[in-house]
Length: 235
Image (cartoon, rainbow, N blue to C red; front, side):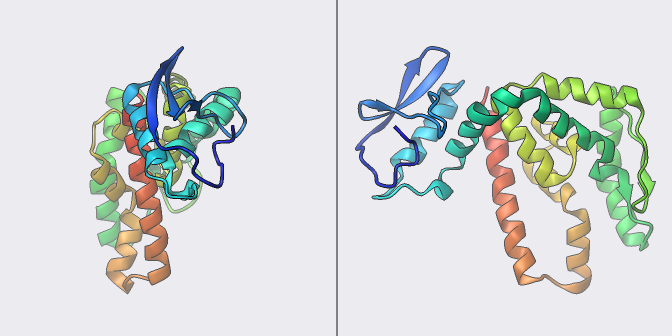
């Protein structure tokens, strides 16, 4: 059965215990990923969220309304088989983390960045054993190999399901440190999003908000919230 069947054929979507976790039963048929693997979720809470997406579908399946299902499919079909490569992609953000690249001016923006980002870098140095250097402008600053290795080890500890969501948190924010602070509940999801948007919000305060950019930001914000919730439901 293809999970992206165009038309709805089921009346009920239920969580079903399965070896290794929880499956989703559409009446008497079990949901599979696009690559035909069994869709087995690691926790009942995550399975309930996925089942709710299937139950909410109308006459036709709309993948755009099923973010939990999409991320779960990615965890099984992509992340599991390419785990080391994706770990490296995510860990590499530590070498060019958003929080390390500061504006040279004006002073108001410099202060905003410092107030929002310095506490997170101090936390990373003390709690994660990963001090990072900062610079002004866009010239690359090399980070200590020990710090990068410590950050990679943290990413390696994630499960494929956690890594699928964590990848989105990092790529949407531009910061490995910010995503680690969020998933370890050092900061809230609203704080994390606000701190990732210091530059954009400063531009808006100076020049006003562009309608197209605002729409892109709304989509990114929704995806960020979804990734945080998915990560939390992984257990």
